[in-house]
Image (cartoon, rainbow, N blue to C red):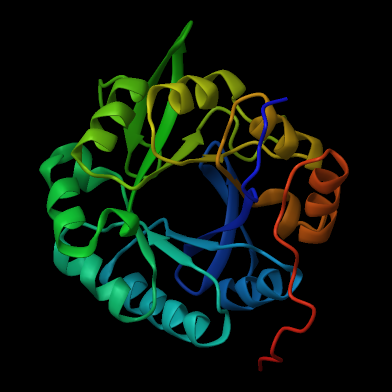
Length: 265
């Protein structure tokens, strides 16, 4: 195992459709599993290191709803918030930062116009810019990025795109395996390792956790800097405490949950 000294970030990923927290398989077959703000605050109390909100529809109505959710969450959960889904412009970027997001994730817009990455980094700082890559395996050692919540192929190579995004000023890559998403069969370790070796910026691995061992594997075997988890939390298979205890017992550094988190209503 690599010598990992910095605490590994464990990040609940909350996919939002209108007022609902949802979860699917391969980014499809979406099921309502709760309310996003309630879930975010619950995971915050359990010791989550960050929260990711992803708006999977991003119509005007959904956008206004998500802005309110982010604003209320930021007032009660004192951890970094990343928000993505339908971010098309620097104005969209700025809007989410103003209501309390710390980072903003972009996918479709930066595929269409990669220079948006540089413009956002110059305007807000690279630390705020997350490039979301939703990738599907296309053969041995090759993955293709998709846009529009995993519906539209791009014709690009996911690893090459990650390298380009990093060179343009992205501060972080959120890497989702469409093939593994929601399956609980584990992360695509080959995909994650290939990207982490190719870029020098942090990579958040997403898609596939079925138990805490999968989280440990993607850190130790594929060198993910952070891990997004959803299904096992939303369906009460494991808790944040279960995940962190497993990592701790495996010798991995994790942040301790605060002894007393301010009671929120």
